[in-house]
Image 1 (spheres, protein in one colour):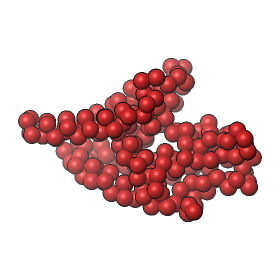
Image 2: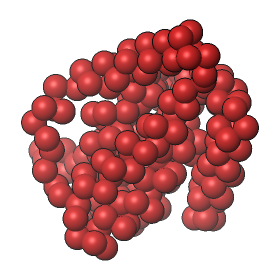
Image 3: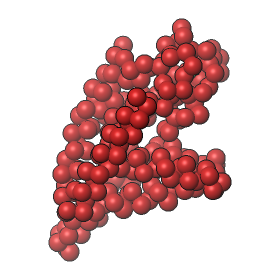
Length: 209
Ligand code: SF4
Ligand code: SF4
């Protein structure tokens, strides 16, 4: 069953390319708006399974590691965390201006896909997901309320840290005091990476208290 997320992501990537190339990008943006409502109940499913940037970043990260050009460092100027909101504002303004003055629908999402590729060639995926992506900023806001989310069963977790190594958004961390993993729901993509590698099946998708 590990290939099911890959199939879902590929189908949505194909839909994204089709809508963008046929000039229907607004339909994708409508889908994104719906995903924010879904995030309130089911978490950031858009980020984990629908987002074209995330889907493309997965093989790009693999290439980056193979070429040994990925760095573990985090650019200082990104750490403040305000850039995603600034990029969101800039993207909206640029889209509206190009529509009004040039009468074209700027393929803003395609531009962000290109940026995500360039960033991921050099930096770990969480840099783009958590510190750059303007769409991620909105998903983080709405996803923080998620009624259902991935959660670690503390009684089962053995603190092996395997989950930390595969999380694209570094949203799962083992507490150094009690050696139990904890997930930050607002930045969790609800993917299956951590649950797939957990040796004791401590991670499940459940209703939060
Ligand atoms: S915590 Fe698990 S489900 Fe959430 S993004 Fe990380 S790997 Fe995916
Ligand atoms: S992989 Fe499983 S057992 Fe290991 S730290 Fe993560 S949640 Fe705990």
